Image (cartoon, rainbow, N blue to C red; front, side, top):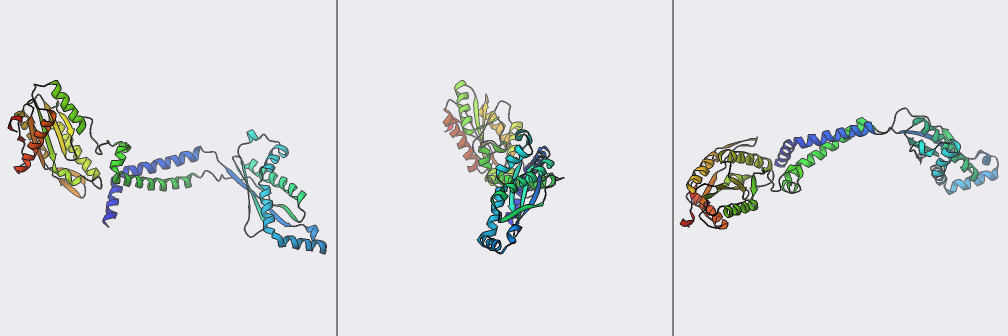
Length: 378
């Protein structure tokens, strides 16, 4: 039951994907149906019977019984194969009807032996119903003339001539649209499930516009590697300048660390976190995403004491419960912890280690308070 509810939730969250694929399939089917050339099918029927002349004498009757003993069905099948030969189609078009094959259009000829009978059905399909009927009758007559010249035991004759059809057999907009809707629904549900179950893989491939880091992050948020490079650049450009580094860890995000079924919830929370960071921090700070639960904040031209105040203000904003648009999750507590360190001539790696130590001290004290660790204190 839980699995059913899980997939129902996935389908509800991915309703726009399902709707988009269904609508696209429906429109594509209608477009294809109304732009495709209508095709018509007509059929002529022929019957294979013993030659009446052979029934006149006893000697011919014995010959006929012998031929029937061989295999009457194989003879009928042979006649059908002969009638579908391209030779008789070409002869009917070029010699009998004297039409230009290049201007005639594309027509197909096929034959089938009707079950449990000695009747042959010859079908012609093409864009013009009148020409299709003429071709069916002409091809049949041409093939009959050939068959009678080589076979005298069984006679073949026209049973029902082909008539021009009034309704095309293809395309069928209603049927095609119905099939397209069903396929669109199935494909949409599959995409919604794949998007939830394999969000990380799909984001790596750039599908659905997801960032390679799984979560959708704005360009102003650096990856951990990019942030460390930027930190080294800042230290190189201002070796004696004032600069502070802060780390913020959100333990509440650990609940949604899995990609499924909380990927959408996680992204919603991250959007709120980023909004708070952008609103509460100065405009000149450099933000980085360290891991699934941590952010790094580089504060140029800011002393440690001022940075503690700024990061503390942000931490206070992050302690507020976050309301989510999820029926099974009412509120979320981020449980933020933060640590700050000030640059005093140390390397980038040492500066990061100091900030991490300050972050750990916040846990040791059992408080969600920002702790400051200077280089000289370590």
